[in-house]
Length: 254
Image (cartoon, rainbow, N blue to C red; front, side, top):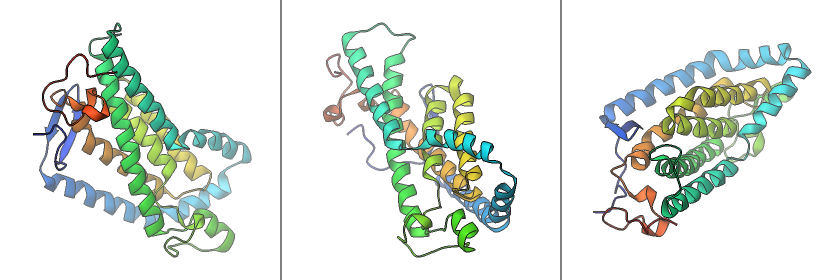
C-alpha cells in the first residue's frame, strides 16, 4: 500500500513521533463547541468590543499593533520558507551533514512540509469562508453603520470572517509548537499578539480571529500524524518519491 493515507483519519496530534487516534465523535464535539463559542462572541462580544476599542485606542497604540499585524501578512512567504527548510534538510541528510541533535534534519524536513500543508489547507478553508460568509468588516459599521452579512463575493469590505492574518500566525505557531514543543510558548504568544492586532486595528471582530485560530489548530492537529510519525517515510523523500513503496534509502534525499 502507498504510505500516503487514502483517506484522512481522525487524529489528536503527534509529539516526538507518537500519534494518537480518537473517535470521530470527539471531532464533532470540538467543532460543535467551537461553533457555540463563535456564536456567543458574534452575539454578545464582537460589536461592543469593537466600539470600546475604537474609543479607547490611541494613535500610538494603533500604530504599534499595525506593525505587529504585518507579521501575519503574506502566508505564502512562510510557506516558501518552509519549503526551503524542507529542501535543505533533505540535502543535509543526503550529504551526511552533522546534526545539531539526533534526528534534527528529519524533524525539520517533516515540520517544513507540514507547515506548507497547513498554510495551504487552512488558507483554502479561510478564503472560501471569507467569500461565502461575506461578513462586513468593522469599518463598515463605523463608516456606514452596517453590521452583519453582505452579498457573497461582495468584495474586500465583506471578507471579515475569518482572519487570514490570524490563520497564518497560528498556522505557523501551532506547527512550530507541534514540531518543537520547547518553542511553543514564544510562538503562540507572538501569534496571539498578531491576532490581537487585528482587533486593535479594527480589521476584524473577535469571532473572526477566534475562528481563524481554531481553523489553524484543527488543521495542524488533523495533519500532523501523517507528516511527523516516523513510521511514515514519505515526508523524508523527494516529491516524486513519495508514493514509492518500502523504506527510505540513503540516495532518496537531495
